[in-house]
Length: 217
Image (cartoon, rainbow, N blue to C red):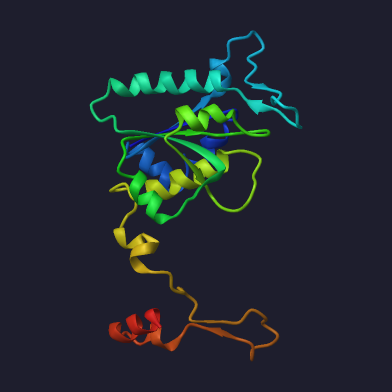
């Protein structure tokens, strides 16, 4: 699976997707993340990609032209591949809020292209004519779409076969329940040995039925 990200800050994606489980999965070629510098598709010598909003108002708006050219360039490359089922996503505060159901749905595509907004937003013609859908990561405003893109890629990648060691590691499969590990009894304050934090006795019983009942309670 391939993730393509159009952004003004492609370097933000390097460290996150080249460490831990996701880094190992990329080494195994289970998926690939490529971040593209939006300014490469600007047409002026200063590589300008934003302009002041029509009708007035504060801030700057990302232009439609460099975004359109970037999307078209990526799509042209994708069309040459055998597996080319593609979805273009605009990260937006107005989009539908992302959840696990979205992650499962998006994991069925071969290519996901993300458009990361900045400043006061993106020319509305991007949402109207270029993106297939708008996605939000919650009722909060961030400086740009880079962190939401990382979050969505991370969530989708977990559903790619082989990325996780075991399918049971998927939170929605096992359910969200408290987990513990050693030591069995923890004393945070060595001077006050009466204050201890213990692992629930059900988890120490070795009785799988009791453990399952406790986790579902």
